[in-house]
Image 1 (spheres, rainbow, N blue to C red):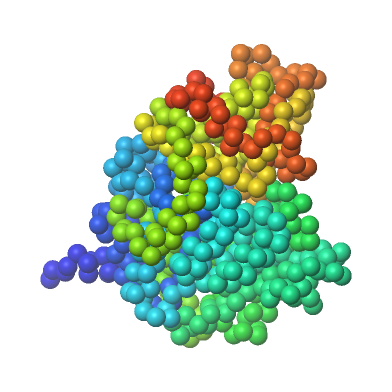
Image 2: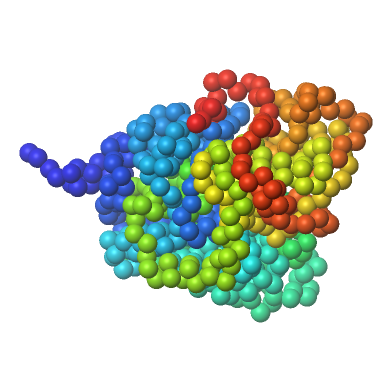
Length: 590
């Protein structure tokens, strides 16, 4: 008997859903033309996007070559890169999906397959899936970090992204960088958002409870002391689907608390368990989904401690993971996913939900290639209109890249180095510090660097730079603190960012060591050892405490690029790593 190619893929997809094949077996056989063949399965389709960081247009985006796991995380997703990632998920080397999920042969593959993401192309896929699944059988969820990351998002205070998400038809979202606007702007944007903003772990301070300035906001619950709606229940495919929001728990630590003086955050396992239990008891859902911005390692731990959750759709750490991880807990098991970043992927989880519970599932993390998906004209018209008032500024040509400029990775990226070099040169400093943000797009060799690219790398609501003296001891303390956040054995002590980037300084890092012992042998670029008691002139940006006095970082970087005309790095200040041999979270990349 012979079967058609379409029928073959349909059968393989069903086999994977039933657990007969690894989750990536379906992926390994595909060619570019098959990427968007997603046969219907079951009666409930969860579509999940996260961490788009306000990228309305298609971009280039290089996946990390360093995403180290330590302790129990070593050798496990999401801490797999390069060939190790391909082997684990059975992705064919050189395939379109190998390019989507890894850094291997990035430049060549990017030129072959083109840009990724773009809300107009994403809209086409979402509309297609809604049509194929049928009315009332899908729900679109946004994991947050949506309103920040571009010039237009900054200048419109996130309203450009609210409008885009309304046109996309997002049903519910949670947040993180959303909270880095002023609290009144956050509330205003949520009121304009046509979906539901969910965050069970955001409460009011004791002081705010007595005189809360947003008491007229629909999400506020005076009795519970919560600032936002904790959950919603949707009817999807004839099933009752509960969605619980989990906002980024460390927002007031990782970002300025001065923007959100009345709100407290946290992981709060006990509270999450009580919310899940209450929802199960009172709402009688067939499926419980947590829409999370914890970061994947935190989600994996939470899934092991909190029972009654069927699916966690996660974000924050920007991990593109092709298949869900099944976590056992006292209530059974929970599927944990993470859907990448920058508009590059759409997670599609089809579920068979019958007799009050999930009977089976099939999952695909679908890359959005703008060359393979047509642009939705309605969305493209909106995007063009949003960008029109700022187009001249955004399209200013600043310099030409002579090598791939990227950010993503545990340690310094080449665009990060450009920022560090700009801080040192323009602000006349020996040393520069730049945050290990995980957002930021990629520029290919030969591509013109525009103001748009600079804003993609630097655009936050606290962009001011500083120039001040720090001791060598201060510099080491900063490195130790950030590395502990990144490599602490307990995921609940990780905040999800990458290592602070340094300009003008080299050092040795042993990720497996304990706090205070990971950083050693700090030297200036000329090889002179950093002395603990000596003072060094340091320039940086994005302070989370009091506002810095200097110009916005994008002006500093733009000045540097206008002066140099071309970018070819003389040096990349990456640390010498100790103890990472054989760690599948490390590869030299390409």
